[in-house]
Length: 634
Image (tube, rainbow, N blue to C red; front, top):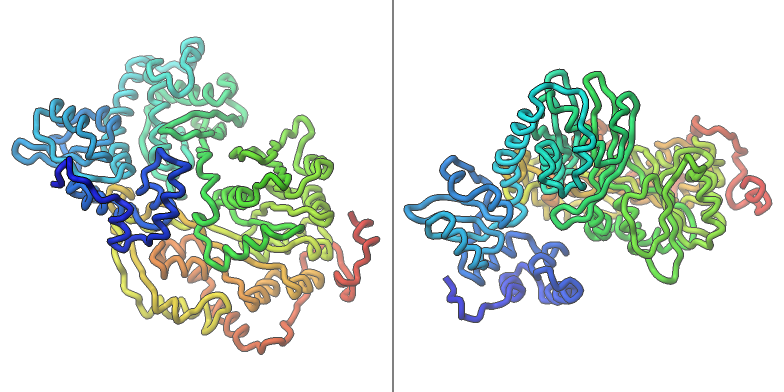
């Protein structure tokens, strides 16, 4: 072990010497640390993507002489249970690993805390052998293997004793004495609810589902887009538990027949959080879903979204446009809001006026004027947009285009010199353009206003703890070539295959045996080019627009997913789960072959569509549309 009084080499220099980062990346990290002095340089370097957590841990091992310990195969035994109280594990972020004679091996987030080591020695009566481990892994194991054991079981048991006689009512006066999520001494039900919410946050869940069934109440967390059953609650304490959650969300606990929506805020594990709460009556009682909104996630930055180089350039080009509509499309929960907030954060400047209309405002952004829909007061998307135009805006964000009135207002705003960002629920980028036309916007106005569409999904990324290499098979190689063709304007296909690094997750304690931990975006960016505008004006189908966009270099969602696979970020199984891979392989192959065979400069066949409400003469092109015509339409 390195002597305490010996001057240690700094972590950054160890990482540079090991080749984990460059000197330029270290300088960038040190510059960022000046504005965040409470963060360690290792945390900053990992956050910026310059190196991995394991790189930093191994650097600490070299610096201190304390060994790094992976917790992938951690097993919590009865022997270890008696060593350190669970409350102390959670408080100090430590985990007993193994008893060796008269010594106890302990994984620690901060093994250089000698006061803590001495406290552990006195607590256990054993010599402490410290190991360096990742704090998030320690927390995840405490939650999975220890947390529920010492928390939820105890609270449920106490609540069952308190509500021995099944009671359909709740003592409201007693419950209201508790003050938010911090009132841990207000009764077992309150502490149970607090534990459910806190552990969901600490495990990285995006939603909490509390679902009554005929025999029990099931609690599930949505982690990385997949629901996991966490615990069950006896039906005897169903009503007190549901009522406690409704009180926190300021819902009417006496109303059990109608859906309700509420909201609450709290700070958990140092994170400022908002919770959107939805209550829905079912045949076995009220089901609650809590959407967890972490305000810090809105500021991830474009570099953290998983954009490929061509997608990043597309987004920056759209952000620099002086006017027009950019659409971000995808299903609910695909990360559209995070992408839009990241773009607004990029554009946020004292020289521009940015206004948003959202339902609801999920995250507050300093320096941006955010408006929340209030239908009861007559403030909906279209009404807000009309008011925005009198507020001298430069950039407008419309949370979602839901109807033709909102669409017309957004088109009007873009054609009067404003940059408009909005979202649509469509499957891919080309279908967003057709959807605008089907919603009632005339072809020539859509062609005049739309500048680009970014369609996206979220794929689970491979767990870094149990990551294992995979060979590049001929089957995958043929699939890759089938979707990319022999050439692609944006991707060097042969170079990508030559650099392929494929992995899978074995499954470990940290990833709950799934092999995945975290998510990244896959994107399909389509520019509204002159050729695409011509197709819009001729009321062409989605397939025609899609083929033209691919010919002009658009990388599809399926291709983007394959790039994530070939770069070792996700697996083929996950790519198939989230996209139309396999299902459309032959069609994609045929379309790609056709496009490969079309000579440069040749005309793409155009087929009239069948979904437009307003028929236009074929010669009524955008260039021939007069200003009077546009004004009259608006």
